[in-house]
Image 1 (cartoon, rainbow over the protein chains, first blue to last red):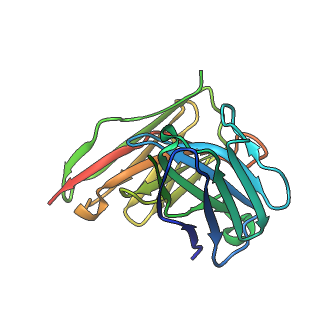
Image 2 (cartoon, rainbow over the protein chains, first blue to last red; image 1 turned 135 degrees about the vertical axis):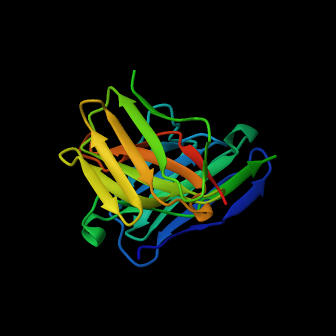
Length: 118
Length: 113
């Protein structure tokens, strides 16, 4: 089956620092990757859509200069939270999509990264 | 305004019974709807997809219905087991040329042994 990994699984950082989260599709090529944020007991909120080799498309209200997304290859996308603040503390989840892999409109999700900003 | 609503309160049922979860939406026109399972501290896991021209889909103990007139999907788990306890999310997709999904807030299911 399709496996998506995220690294790190959790991170604690000081306010003002930047944090990079990696999302990898391990056994398939992902034409598109998505980044979500989830606060406790709330839904997954789509932050941006990332296509390999092109600029990410951000959802309304998401600061592209604060949440830098790079999709350098068909198996790797990174999210960098720049100048992190305590309100950025959340659970960040990526998903990968490849219509050719499963033939369905199914997204394969990573295990998530818990970010805590002190 | 656009909304996706799932029961915010936890659904608590006895093992062996059928669990029925509801997903209602307004001001969306999804081409398909998906259901995911999410365990605490983990990413969602895909369960089922149903398209707008399909009324019902089954997979083992799972059944999903999709009524585009009512703008509602029902998710059933028959012969529920304690291992089915998790949060279940519905997600709408195919509303534009992208493959992005819009998620509901989820319903927590607790199956008592």
